[in-house]
Image 1 (cartoon, rainbow, N blue to C red):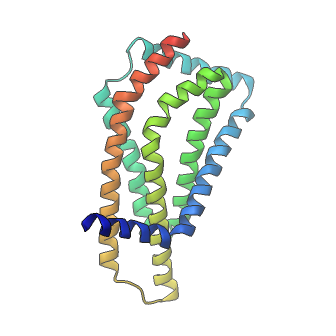
Image 2 (image 1 turned 90 degrees about the horizontal axis):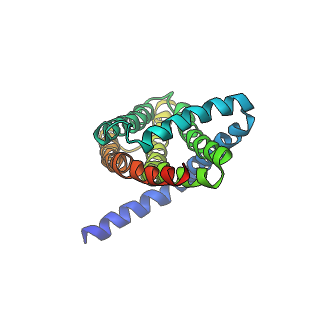
Image 3 (image 1 turned 90 degrees about the vertical axis):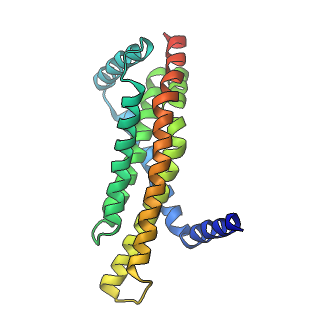
Length: 213
């Protein structure tokens, strides 16, 4: 019974916010495409410099000289938590809406640039490296960012309507309570993604790098 109730709540949420989800997903994909395009706009010397530092990093991974898994776990979790935490704060502010959209676009751009640069410089091997280093944790992180960005945009729009249009809507405190619970749940998922990035991705990268070099 509870499972069916939760399924109905989730289905209702996606149905009510479908237009915002569509906009957010398209914006994120535009960021990914823009990031990939930026790679082609770099000069030859810039690409050479970046690839040199990347090769140094790959050498450290191959030799096991990167940060410990526990350090990577903490760094990844706090980095992503700060990102969605900032979106959460912006969502309950009147002026935060455009900044939320910019942050989401930038996240897509970083993903697109990382994958695009690896593929541009290393071809098929770069694709394999991006597959094992970028994809595993982002299978969780990206959906979480999209959901939290959508909810933050939705709350921000409600705040704007409440402030400027004086429309009667649902009480503010229960709405903010649900909002905070969602971001706490998102934090749990980010902890799981951080564990993947810290313990699984380096091992997969080491296998691919050793096969390449």
